[in-house]
Image (cartoon, rainbow, N blue to C red):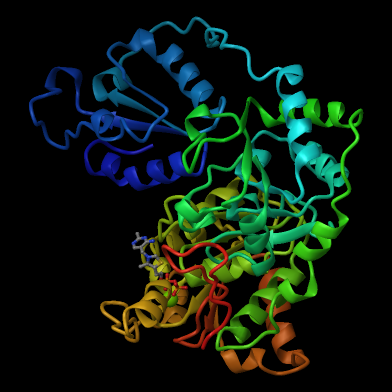
Length: 495
Ligand SMILES: Cc1ncc(C[n+]2csc(CCOP(=O)(O)OP(=O)(O)O)c2C)c(N)n1
Ligand SMILES: [Mg+2]
């Protein structure tokens, strides 16, 4: 909910984020009173027009009688199909008006055209699989949003083909599955990216194939036929036309496919799986300036109970966190993926902790992004939310600095944050317990009892906690597919 004018415009980034990442969001904004609309009244903003291209559905309410139906519709559209943001703009006179309440209103949409029928697509799909020499599976957020994780896991167990996940697909596939190659894309594993480059049959489960996953779209999976399981037809054929579109809820299409599969003889792909997951494609041994930070994240993640949620902000720390995420909890990693909006993590962590008071919520932010919504420390304190906040303090807008270093001859324009405020003092000013942790603490093998104790106490505390981790300023995220390169052209480590 936001006030008219500046409050409403402040929602725009959040709405854009929800649109990109399929987050069901009902936004309600106050509007100036009906008779003033269109007069440039104080704090009047056409928030309906402003957010039209970002919302799934929106409505400027014109009469109080509409309100029950509008609210019912809003919640329906936000959650149905591919979830996303909706917007209700409510003039203040309607907020003050009264009417007789006639009981809850239910919204019943018109029935939609039937989704893919099992018998129509499974024959084609099975034929494609039978011809395939190097099939792979790419798992995106849609697999989780449709509640199809267990169906997907049993399908993959049956197929046993090399599988990888997008940032938003992390946790959907069982970590220990022998065919799982980790995260794919710009900062994905070498194994996942090579398999995606070499495949001749790509099964996509609820992912839209954006450029961070495909690399250069003209050289993306050059030999692959694409089979796309997707609920939203507007996501299809963006990189190139798919061979087969399986449109519908994955919770229905995946089991339908799996059932038919049990009757069809499939080739054995053991040799392909061995190449894709082979030693020469394994992650390189740890090296480089980022190692203490990666180890720090490993040590934290390892200590988390299985049902914990990690909320990452945007930048290098986000990619390190995604790379080190090793949990099989499908909804355990939340971040602003599509929009990449710095400042996301702290308010999002507030939302997660409010929704799930009993779990551990670990917020991982950068020193830059943290300062974009730093005021939410006040909310954390006021509501007494026991969020565990980490700032990976490299004293740079690190991800941009990395690009400047690698592709712009170290021209560090406007990325220097060496004059950062003292975050520990800031935490204390908000009455939140805060402490620093030096990088050297993570270079001792084994971890000293003292450092282990700091991490244990931090995570086990029943209060909000802030831990400021000092990260090497010029640490970089590798592997990396440079912008415009193909997935097979990864940079693996620092030169
Ligand atoms: C609101 C916003 N502005 C700019 C960017 C571009 N951007 C992406 S990552 C990044 C640097 C983030 O710095 P920091 O929060 O310190 O994280 P680090 O990369 O250092 O871990 C910037 C500026 C963005 N994603 N969002
Ligand atoms: Mg930084």
